[in-house]
Length: 427
Image (tube, rainbow, N blue to C red; front, side, top):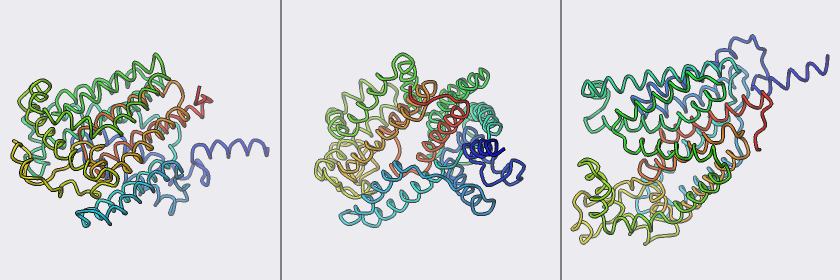
């Protein structure tokens, strides 16, 4: 009898159900909270990408309240991620001492601290019982179809829905861009979940819906990120070690060489734009990026160790000689449109080094915590995330971090399913 009770408690602990009985109404209700959250991400989140932060981080707040009110276990903090977060937040706050825009730096450091704290909480939330988790993946697949259908119909109708939701006409492509790029990130664990559960219908729905959303969303970055992830997925099916080593090498190259590579591209930006940006829209946006990268890399070389201070990019000084040879860049700085360049500009080599340590930690988690069946999808997700990071978003964008956290949490939930089935991780 004692042995049986011990086994039952052990299973409950693995599922995060200790401290309540299986018939506890509060426990059952909160078990199905992730279903609602992750069903909203590919539907509501696709139409309004910024909604990710409220949905994902609100999920973490709800779990903390459940721990206090309903007696659910507190989220577990990942010590490695906690260390990286503390180092990065510490550097961000310290940068206010030498920042050229101290008020902006304090605001950015406060936002990053809040985002990282919320991210750690969500990542520490234990996955629900298997039945609720199975429903989560099925509901998310259906939500992908709903979201893709919504964006397709809205595009055919001239974006009337987005015109009603957006604050201005300029916000319309931004919301769909974010939604599509974030969908690429969470599509990988959804595909992995369908493959793990041998649910061919859900696999086909998620794959087709993601393709449909990318076809109608005005996001070249999302399409490139999906293509990069697909290439890595196929390569990982052939050789896991080769892909792991390749991702580590590419991460190190991006972290160390971004300002030098972008400076070389920006130096002859007219020829680069003429060869690689083939449509009028991309030619304009691409040339604008190259102009931004031109003066941003120059500022990075001026303060290479600690940078100009977090969130100071928009206050960077531009010389008359620089502005005289630009077509699209203004008289004031802009955000760098490349997170790694932003790290170099605002936090210097120190910030880039901490970000590289984070990338290596993620790779180690994939290798040590996920089974061979899940790793190819996780590598694909990492490749997609790295692709997006070199062309979009501020390092403190809350919805961007929420999308990354949602992707990681789903992979962690899948790893929990495999542990219950007795499937080993590293192999």
